[in-house]
Image 1 (cartoon, helix red, strand yellow):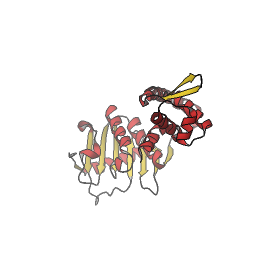
Image 2 (cartoon, one colour):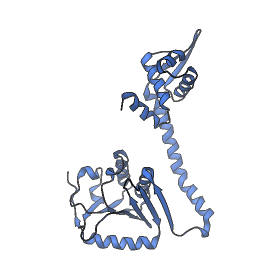
Image 3 (tube, rainbow, N blue to C red):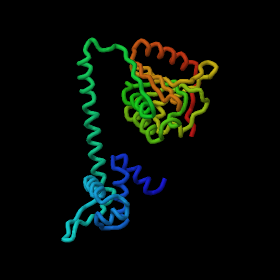
Image 4 (tube, helix red, strand yellow):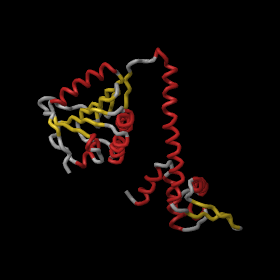
Length: 261
C-alpha cells in the first residue's frame, strides 16, 4: 500500500472520500493553491475540486482566503480531525445511552405476544465481530466458551484486543475449554489472570470443531470458516441450562493450562 493509499484508507474510516484525500495531499504538496492549480495537479475537474475543498473545510483540514484575484486554499494540520473524532465519540456515547431505552420500548411493543425464545443470525466478518462484542458486552459476571481457535486467527487484532479489554473493564470471569495443550501470552493478552481460566480437553473425549459461547440465557454457535462465516445466537433458557451442564461436565475432565509467555 502506497503512502497516499494508507492516508486514504485512514480517512475513509471517517467517511472522507479518496478523491477528497487526494486533493488534500495535493494541497499539502503545492502549498497555498487555487482550485485550478489543484485540478491540474490531481486531474480532478475544477467543479469537483470545489466540492472536495468544501468537504475538507467542513472537517477542519483546509481554509479558504478570499483575495482580489480569487480564492486561495491552504491545508491545515491533520491533527485538526481531533474535533471530528470527539464529535463521533459523543455520538457513539449517545447512541449507547439510548440503546437500552429503545430496546425496552421495542420489548414493550412486542408485549406478552413476543417470543420467549429467539434465534438471531449473523453473517460475514461484521456478523462475527458483532456476536463476539455481544459476548463481552452483555454477559453477566461470567462466560464459557468451547473454543476452537484463538480469536485473532479469524478477526483483526485491533478488534480482538478491544474485546479482551472489554472483558477486563467489565470484570468478567471467562472459562475457555480448548483442544490445544498449550496457550501463549500473545494469544490472550491483555487478560486478568485472576479471572481468566483455560482448560485442555483431550480431543478423544470431546473434539471441538465448532465454537460455542455460553452466557446469560444465550447459546451462540459460531462457524469462522471462510466458506460460512455464520453465527447463530440462540436465546433459550432451557437450552442454555443443558449446554451449561455439558460444559461443566467437560470442564471437570479438563486439565488446567497456564498461559505461557
